[in-house]
Amino acid sequence: MKNSTNKQNKQQIEETTKCPKCGSAHLIKDYSRAEVVCDSCGLVIDTDLIDHGPEWRAFDSEQREKKARTGSPMTYTIHDKGLSTTISWRNRDAYGKSIPTRNRAQLYRIRKWQRRTRISDGTERNLAIALTTLDRMSSKLYLPRNVRETAAMIYRKGLRRKLTRGRSIEGVTAAVLYAACRQCNVPRTLEEISRVAVLKKKEIGRNYRDISRELELKLLPTTPLDYISRFSSRLELSNDVQIKAIKILKKAANKELTSGRSPTGMAAAGIYIASVLCGERCTQRQVAEVVGVTEVTIRNRYKELANKLDIDIEAPEDIENL
Image (cartoon, rainbow, N blue to C red; front, side):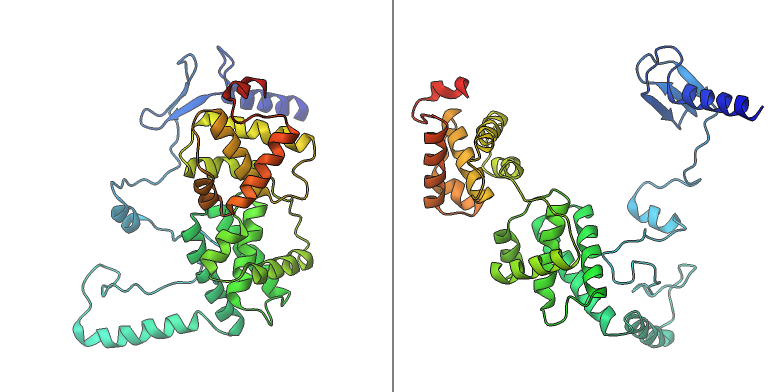
């Protein structure tokens, strides 16, 4: 009996996740009509759909904040993970009424001590300063949320292992941010991170090696293909140039021409050759300024690629032969 009921439940689940008429799995939940509709054939599969969202409506962010009964989600980018309470700077009580002037001095003192008690010891103070620095660097590099969360997790692990002792907070923060970019496949060069952190690449690289070794971070080396899309967008090149640069670098990787070479230098050379072949020629200086390498590096790399791959960059008709 139990087996038969389990099979019936599985069949019901499969029927609700697929359209019984066309078998499509693209179902739309229309909460305004309380219906489940197939996106392919338009069949109404279910009615009286239960809306699990809030019972109230909000038309802007201010109304949403006032009506919400929960706080912000937990995040590792705040030293207390965003779980502690805060006293608002607005001088209003729980009912929205203005606090009398005679009580504002007391509220100011309570707010000040509440801020102080959130940081209880030196470890939390170190973490609070580091995460603030991490947020500043991430904002300047336009990094997504998952990279910030990953970097905060790596820093917390390093702090528990006492890897931050004897090192500057900025240096360790820059190193974990570089490691998080590598781990999340959002490549950023050491030159970019050192420019934002106002530190030397040597210091960031040393901290990065020590942290990755002690925490056993399994990070794959970056490849020139990781930088093609971002550098091409900054140079305002078309998709044809990006596709051609990827093809060139893939052929170079198959012939082991990229091993032992800087990935940014190889990416710059591939973009330069592709731009010439596609008729959207960029100067070596423009590419060098965007990528962060010297013109000599681009010149050496593109000559090497052109010789090894038999590319005549002065003849655009070779574009179809790649």
